[in-house]
Amino acid sequence: MLSSKERAAQLGREGELRVAEYLRHKGYIILRQNWRDSRFGEIDIIAESRENIVFVEVKTRSENAVVSGIDAIDAKKAKRIKNAANVFMRKLNTDLPPRIDVAEVTVKINAEKKKLWKLNYIKSAM
Image (cartoon, rainbow, N blue to C red; front, side):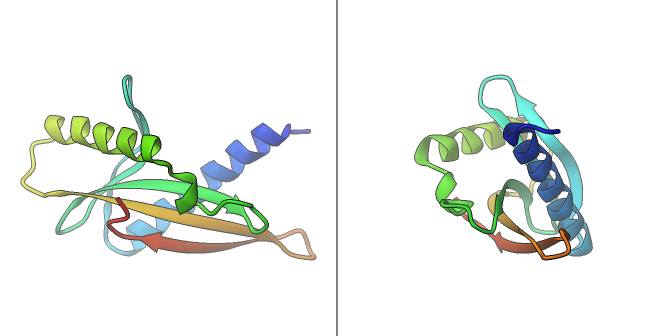
């Protein structure tokens, strides 16, 4: 049996996979998933659209979560994401400007124990 921390991590991974699939469906090219900078931490998804290099912070929550995904990103976390995005952009040879989005994924378990997913995708969230 998984601990609550392991269940949360698994749910987060599932949310990230769903967001990556959503982006692919919208025509984005996924460049990296779970890209890590040793100083500033991880960016969940880095994608390319026709107009931008898009850095996506995915926040997956259960339906009864106290704090929404966007509200879980405090000023310190936002700064780390921006700094990591800047590091990635310096290494990438592109003229496309960066954009930072947030994907709020909410999961509800129905009576049949099936997961129902809802996505709130926020462009230019930071």
